[in-house]
Image 1 (cartoon, one colour):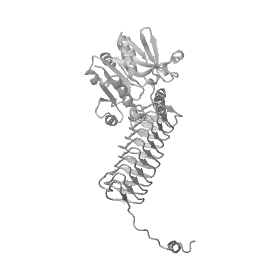
Image 2 (image 1 turned 180 degrees about the vertical axis):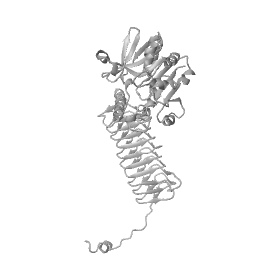
Image 3 (image 1 turned 120 degrees about the horizontal axis):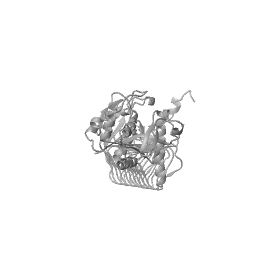
Length: 456
């Protein structure tokens, strides 16, 4: 069985945060999560994460799903892999993939392609490489007649070697048994006093073993971040990569300013995404929608032909042909059925809104089951919480809720029920009845003259 070792012990001091660098998010997912997902997508499930700084945070993120090893002293990449020796010793027959937990753009195709080359060439070690436009700062790959001969770091490269654009990604496939042997040959005989994993290339070649290199078609596999500026660069690369995918699939963007779409979002053909929109999680959006500007959509199902304008929606479903916004909040567990119109400054929470219903403005609908073709007047509130428990309202088809109506849950309005403006409903209303709750209006003549005496 094949192993994966992910190096995730770095602190990232230049990030200016008390968090391991691999836990910093890119498009909302920690970099470590990107790397683990690429492994799983490649069919690799036996994973050991080498932790170091703030190890308890790594443990909390992994939640016991994968094995871990602790690097108490950070003495280089080779030393980090040494901490996983018990993990490798338990499964020595296959191959071991070593990855950096803060290089999020490694992909499953690269992992599988490198393993295929690794095995076909009979390599002890295969370095995953990429060709980049500007190789400054990366270790250069020096190829020979039989694989690679060495990796030359930037500071040690001569003028000709610095022209080489094929660079080391920091990811490797090893024969597991060979890796265990090669780790035993590493020394600290260098300026940093550390164990370098790159030294395994030299050791393998000089012990008569073969070292090879797999050139990934994805140049982004080499990208990582050492500071906030680098993290922003990763965010930009990931963000634009997702947008490019949707463009290829027939999604329209008038511009990309402020648009963030996470990787698992699915968007239908002909849908427009407008500026300032953030779409996250397992959201699915249908065909020919207009989303934005300035929407936040998270874990929602949005069907065809929906228009959302300045809407925040979470863990809810919006059926076809719905128009919502501006300035609307759709809270979790809501279902907005087809043909509904929701206007400005409306909040819907844990409610079903029936087909063709209109909630025009300045209204709160919480914990309610609303029928078809209901009209909500301005200022309507479903009073769902009594300070101890939350209760539901039920509103029948074709009801008309007058302005500034309070529905004190639990209460049921029958089919075609009407409420007069300003009514507070505290008991059920039968089908086709009108509820009026008003005390007689009193007019006090001359009241304001007395109140404003001397001020007019």
